[in-house]
Image (cartoon, rainbow, N blue to C red):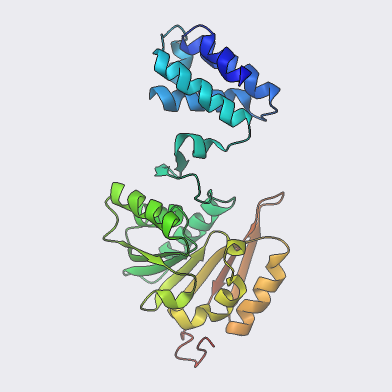
Length: 280
């Protein structure tokens, strides 16, 4: 590509490489060309963005210049940044991601924040959770790191390849004694009732509405479900939850724009199993 060749042939310093990359990304229509150029360069050379700005005359190795040129050309061609670097940041965690893995969807941080708030207001004691459609494992990892009361987390995904990525992330943070990575689609994959079921992207699950209806049967007394839904899904999701357990208390929060709504369903004192509400 001409842009890649031009970038590789320009002066080999942080400042000139960054400036040229910014121009290429701006011409390609990037909404944040400076931020993306700086983020890619910082990741490549292993220093914070602030260090790049403070030392623009720092020389780059020819191999790094060529790699940076390739990265910028890929980003200009529309490849998401995490697929270029193999990493993404989520709530202070550095998470590895492979080309075929789903990216962390919008609203995921708000799902985690709602789960943490729910846990901190729950009856004291150890908690078990299930993360449905875990992807690269972002939600499961964040819950395990940020709330020690989650001593058992079942992270479920239907893609063995994506689950392998998630498992490696868990190993890197020494959390695989807490998180059980399970291959599957449905709530019957994990072996015991849990206190909380979370789902960062309901539309990614082929059985999303069935999951809502059957959640009470897989929860302990006073259990809850938290998920992110689109505006179109929100009324359907509420109906599915009430069909599963008519006494459910449902709370929703919308951030507006393209952000999904967060739904928290707090079930009654008795679990679905106790009420005879087993999945079909």
